Image 1: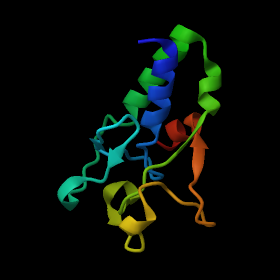
Image 2 (image 1 turned 30 degrees about the vertical axis):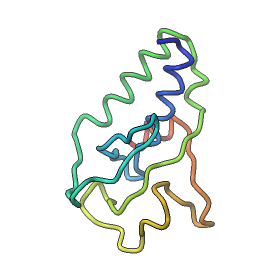
Image 3 (image 1 turned 90 degrees about the horizontal axis):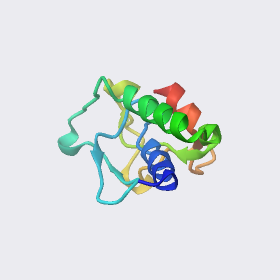
Length: 118
């Protein structure tokens, strides 16, 4: 793959990170699309924090593109919170699957922020 394609794919994949540091475990049919966990079963994988770091490090070593770290993307949102230990009873499907800020706008953080939260 070309570096530009890899760059965008990595940015899109960070959109699957929840604000509590966990990841959506189901990838949708399009790049950057994520789906809430099926059957209301909470799934948190222990290696989810490792793969974004490892792939980002490899990408930056091969391209020298450190500006990648300040690119922004939204966070995934579903009822899961507190690393899968609790449910957000206020959230509903009508709010969509992107984390909202207090002003009800979609919150976006840098790739570096996503990595640190994980």
